[in-house]
Image (cartoon, rainbow, N blue to C red):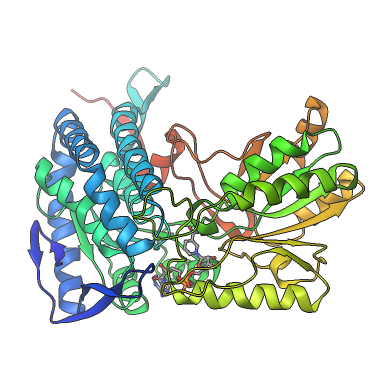
Length: 471
Ligand code: NAD
């Protein structure tokens, strides 16, 4: 595995091991960039960025669609790389690869419609608004969606005509390498896309400080997001922050508790709960609580935990030992405050970072799991009596990414939609994100949007041009 700088695969003197979370075996070495590599990547992004923005839009679109096609045709192989380094079941990994190829297509085609406008003005003046690429982007992405997170940033930047230096996760580097290979094979000009790995804090500080970097894009935890946003702010650079969440699910008295529970289980344990929009606090009206818990437990019992490469497995290991330790701490804390472990609650007695799908009931509001993002396969369920009280609990945390509501009443649904303090709402289902609509948070879950027409906004600047006509 190598870094990708200025259209070439470049070796690095230092490297770190990459683990298979299902076996704990070393499966490869990730190269770690030094300061000189980072400087070369930025210089390449400046040169490549000029070439890319001056490439006719039809040619840019053709290259990006070719890359999307290559990724689609390589989906099986890329999914296998992803499962081996991240753990999610092969079918989930392949779904992610195909989805991100779709996201690239969507962004590439949408960028053709980054129209400006002509504004009526005095006859001797043409007043117009134009959109142009902001310039080289520095992006930092995590390990939970090894294809999804990098591609959202790469697709946004390249579609808008920007170059990008991306530091993908050192824990899941192989997937990012496969994605970059598709762009290289599609004929992307050298320097338009550069891939580095390294010590995260060192790489981000170095890249963000570079005057040539014009936008900082990050997906990850709130504390790291605050750090990078403050570094970007100190240099007066805009940033795009996709941070953590702790999504409430409100199941109202008039909802069908069984279908709500089945939808919730499918979403909760996808990617072993390591999803920023994962439903993670279940607030269920007391009148349907028992039915919801019974169906939730029954659906949870159907989850097959194992190596994501094996047939029939529906939940893989956690991606790293940090999450395993965090799960143990969440459960111990909840139990010490009176919660009941209905199922799971422990790591599995086998190699790999496996934690059993866990359901906790009677979880008090002051339990850690009700206040901090679990980012793992634990579902805390608690009863409520009054919808206003449930909404107040839902909005009581500094997070504001996703929220879910189940009700048969359209009036109650509208109350939830306007009441939830979150950027991504799902009513009567727990479906995932779609390319054609924006995703992003409010409050401390971040700012800026990825996906939909809004997804390109961060990567474009707006110029007002007032042109006085002269002979
Ligand atoms: P972490 O805070 O150590 O790291 C989160 C991500 O940020 C990782 O990819 C890491 O490599 C990167 N990172 C850390 N310090 C950095 C820096 N100074 N500059 C640039 N990148 C840096 O946490 P973790 O243990 O990897 O993950 C656990 C927590 O992270 C979870 O609880 C969750 O809140 C959050 N997380 C969120 C998302 C998301 O999609 N929003 C994804 C992964 C992790």
